[in-house]
Image (cartoon, rainbow, N blue to C red; front, side, top):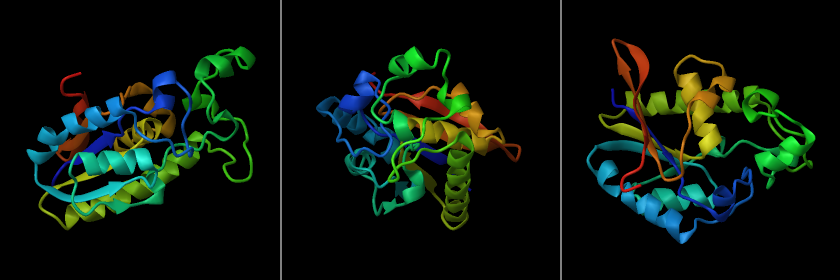
Length: 199
């Protein structure tokens, strides 16, 4: 069975400024496009059996720029729904909620279109994505690539390692970075993390 490759989309104007970017569909910056292009040699050095992307344009464009063939869009790969904290920075949130931390405290309720998610709800989506990825891995000789978002991929990594969603806090993940989740003696492990060529 191949490995699972995680790709965080390239930089956006909101990620650069630290604004929580959940369901707001912002594009990549030119720097973000360059970050994605730098991953091409790493992706091309492996046989890719299947690729999946978040429906949001910053992830779909990243998938296109790194040259993934036949990318399947899956809504479960979208970023954390930040509810009332959409577009707000951590510094701004902590003015009203000192010590606030996303992975343990969750978000404030938002409007009906995006009411917000708890860490556990994000973990449930991550579990569904992992089941889908495992099915793809079982039916291909190559690796499976997931192109998505920072906080979601951190939760997914925690779940892959058998940890609760809140432990995604342990895995810092930069824009335009690639991570590799594999196995050792039948156990899930991190084989490479936060790889950013030329950064």
